[in-house]
Image (cartoon, rainbow, N blue to C red; front, side):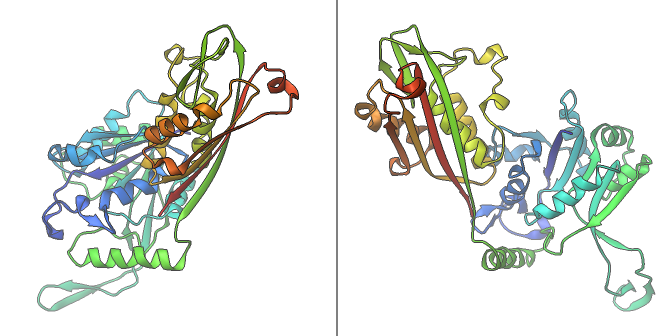
Length: 384
């Protein structure tokens, strides 16, 4: 199963007030849409994310883009916007899609998991909350009551089998649809209901923003203050012909080179894998297969910047990285400062957060016999 997420954020949201569309207003110091995006980008089981935006918002969206995130311009209404995003997924390996309101910044990981779980046995699934309040009909005065049994308040993300929801949207008439469940049901799709969350509110009115701020503060107060991840990476490359080698981004003159599909920068490879590991997103080989000729001889900063971009896309900041190079030769000490500086530059962190050191194996093993170099790396990521 390959899952994509679509976040709708092309509306203007005038009812919410403010000087800019609600999805771009700051909530706890970050745009509303950034909070919604982080909920999906933090999951390893979501392969790609599409932000559906208004054409005037391209510059605002640019700061949110990462390796898995792209933008699509929305249409005249919500259904048209979703249809544009679904069409952009044609030709990919997507089998399931989650469609979420970008103005719902507090969606929980548990809600997303429940929707994905229901898609194992249904072509559609959506979170909802049973109506518990009495329902009245009226205007200035009450003119009647309505039964509330069997009524639900719909939420997002709404999930579907990708081919089925694409066909449903293509067949949908020009009549406005309340949400994607309505489009799916019009096409005859069965949609399962899973438990929603009271905190998963859609920001609609000015008073919704203070409420969302309080909910975010309460989450911090009652749970772990931050999400801390640690990942490890290990890599080995053998010596071969050459007159230089690359280590942690530095070209070092040496009578032998390191052999590999890329530039064989063993230190940078280990650190990249440490970041991927902290994110639970595999390793270099999964993102840059050695069978792909595009990466033949590639500079390893491509892998490292991809890894840190995934981290930022998921709302994480790198707080520390430690690289240990294991070899008899070359001597690392004279180059360690430059290595730290280059890694700090690529990762956009202060050099005091980067450690590079070396050790030997006391002439034991392949490193002791000077057959190659190994590297061990640890990376710590933190998400508020």
